[in-house]
Length: 431
Ligand code: UD1
Image 1 (cartoon, rainbow, N blue to C red):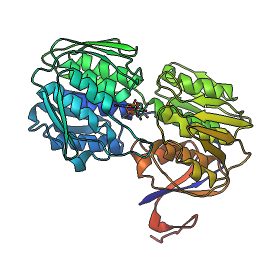
Image 2 (image 1 turned 135 degrees about the vertical axis):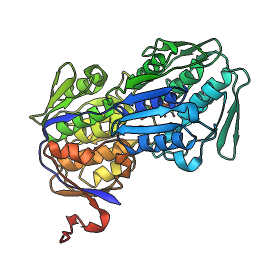
Image 3 (image 1 turned 90 degrees about the horizontal axis):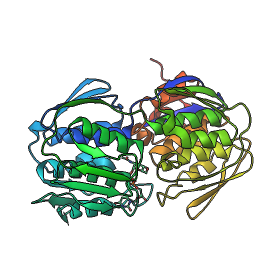
Image 4 (image 1 turned 135 degrees about the horizontal axis):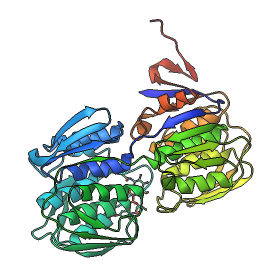
């Protein structure tokens, strides 16, 4: 098992290029199987969640060709079944998108119910309710969702919560349903817009993505397209926080600054210099930062996926900060690990109270989930001394070349096999 060994204390300086958004790519790769013509996707991030999904669609018969590291062609005409194997997709929650895509195209699907998740319970009742309103019969048997529609038709659907997954899943099915669908209280995240733009480029008729009401007119067939995935706002935000926590000065390139506004606003408020350019953003922190209050909310609010990284920044800031987590019920699991590095954080219900301390100190910590993993790496970069970050497989699910990009910014970080680490030291092996 790989681990990161990090010697903290270097302010990050330089520039870092952001890749395609994992969460947009998961939806778009799945939607690509809805046409029998070939789809070319560019700016696909090379991360394990994406590679697992490509494996899953190729298992059901889609022809997947990796043209280069970030370009994939997909042809869904060779799909032989609408039943997906549990082992292939148990690790990626976004496997639920196969439900919407297969129902839309073949009017039937058999997809394993996504498993548990370390950031809290993540029901998919809204996905299922939406599909049922469109005429889909759904049974849960032996851990699988078995879905079939004799007449897949449009419907008026109100989402009780602005769920990203439910919005995209319903949008995919509605794209190939008879008649019109309206989704009210739709999620407005950039990856919802990207998925809609992609479907439209295949011939779908989707209007209003990015607002609370999305209207879809069903079409009978989708066609070939080529499409480039939107830049990853969470990857970008993570490097912004890393600069803030280490007292650095970095340029984050290949971004859409508008998508980063929630992070930009908070970093500016606590004392960072943030400068926006056309497709680039600079974050500079040259003094001790100040306290603030954060509430996670659906886009354009502060993203839950940035909450752990922001907590690290605030753990070194002056004064007492509060973070209220409104999206997931168990997203403070990393707090005990951060405490091992000297952070002072108390969790009460869905609120973390962070008393800023002047210094963090390196420690051995274990990663509980993807974004918390990135946060622990940031903490290690901002801490005095050496840290060992274990269970980095979670980080590899969503960050391409994390350690290489950080190294380029001046971080002292090594990826090593755990058998080579004793305590906080790497055992040197003679070549
Ligand atoms: C997506 C992102 C994830 C991000 C989250 C919130 C992907 C692959 N993942 O997850 O990184 O943290 O959005 O921005 O894009 N809910 C229900 N019933 C449902 C669906 C959702 O109650 O059927 C609730 C969830 O428990 C949660 C809230 O709605 O409290 C938002 O979840 P949702 O937006 O659906 O998250 P995901 O799409 O799973």
